[in-house]
Length: 195
Figure 1 (cartoon, helix red, strand yellow):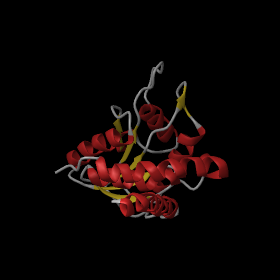
Figure 2: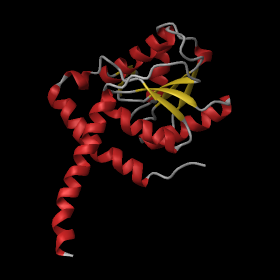
Figure 3: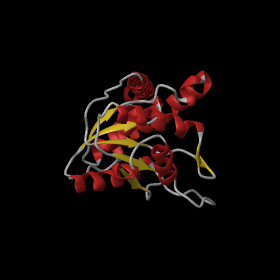
Figure 4: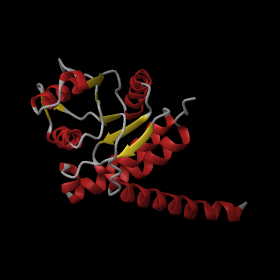
C-alpha cells in the first residue's frame, strides 16, 4: 500500500505531462478538409461587435468558407448576462458582412459551455443528415473541443485559427494551455457519450 501511495504523485505528474503535450500538439494540428459544416465556437462580443478573439475565429472560418470546404456555417454562443444579443447572432452578422449568405448560416444560441454548444451543434447536424464538422476555435481549445464533439456523436476535424490574439501572447498561451491540460482529460473521462 505504501508503494502505491508513493507512486501516485509520479503517475499523476506523468499523466498531466502527457495531457499537456497532447494539448500543445493539437494546437498545430490543422485538419481543414471538406465537411458538412464549419462550426465556429463563440467568444465574447461587445455591444454587437465581436471581440478580437471572436473576430480571429470568424476570419478563419470565412477563409475556410471561401475555400468551399462546407455548404453551411454554424455559429455558437449564447447571450451573456446583461447582453441583448447572442455571440452566435453577432458572428452571423459579421460573416454576412464578409460575403457569407444568410441562408448558409445556422445558429446555436443555447450553449453556455463548450459541451452544451457541441450538443446543440449535434442536433443541427442531425437535421442536415451529416455528422462531419470542421471546428474553428483558438489553438489551445482544439483537443478538448474535438473530444467533446466526438462525445456528442459528431465526426470532428480541427482547424485552429492562425491569428489568435491569445496564441500571440506567450503568457496567455501558456495560461490557457495549462488550463486545457486539466480540462481535456476531464472531458474525456467524465463527459457522457451520446448514442
